Image (cartoon, rainbow, N blue to C red; front, side, top):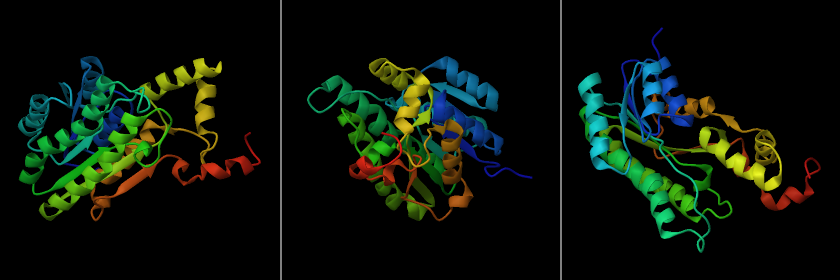
Length: 267
């Protein structure tokens, strides 16, 4: 039986670890040819070898790198059908504490990088007569956390960028959607949990339990669960979905924080 992405070619940024790597594996299992990019050569080469794909090292802020990645997909696999703008960074601070350098990096990677991926991919998608772009944002695009001004600003702006892209290129058969994950067990989130664990005097697993204790599902996601969302948005199952926001956060965004004091479960 043919896979859901049989015959398609996909570009996945930030493809060496976490959500990007899981997405590359899921796409390859469903028949896609994948090109993965990232700043670290080792991880993307490992994922490319595992998925029979190709690795192109570089930074999503670099137009030449993205042009090379798209050209590689076209030259080696015949075209491009899907682009997953997944590369991202975290960090920074509140409005007063975030430095100009941190602000520029957060918006440069998380927002401008997403724009540049779309801009680089569009000509190749148009040559195929259409395609799908998945912009990976965060639940931070919908709600704010503490000391995260640059991160929240960048992720929120992705939603508006997605809508603009969807409107402009829908008539050409290109769908553009945003995916907003919550806490996911990845290399990045493990580093954040280690920092929280040190602050609270607990271990990493206790930190994961702490951040998920108020989520309706009471757990964090596996990267494979978010990859399944990317797979849905990339393929024909979402053929009438564009400009949308798919939230995969264990239900966290539906919780009214002000009522949690009345909860009779976790203190």
